[in-house]
Amino acid sequence: MAYQMDRQVFAQNLRKYRKGNRLSQQQVADAVGIDRSTYAYYELGHSVPRIDTAVKLARLFNVAFNSFAGAEKHIEKPSSDFHYLKLTPTEQSIIIRIRLLSPAQKKDLLESLGG
Image 1 (cartoon, rainbow, N blue to C red):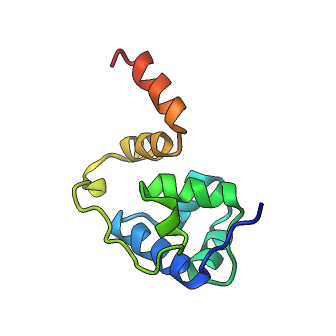
Image 2: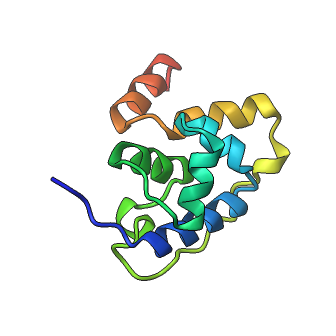
């Protein structure tokens, strides 16, 4: 089943969430396992990712996929309660990896940490 994405809304959302989280294009690309140039094309609206990459991006930015992908015609404001810059590079990397986990993987991680 193919998915529909508003390319321009998606591009605007990518840029807004990336900047709102104070991440570089390279950091986002590395987090989801793509080339920086590929990510730049998404952010410019020249192309759209495969569904698995789009889902990873939504997870990374902790946003609902439908609004992120342009199914809803508005751009949500990035969350300001997370101060990414105050984290060390190692802590940033850990947060990025956790955000990319599926709900089941997050549950398993939490249980393994004793939570």
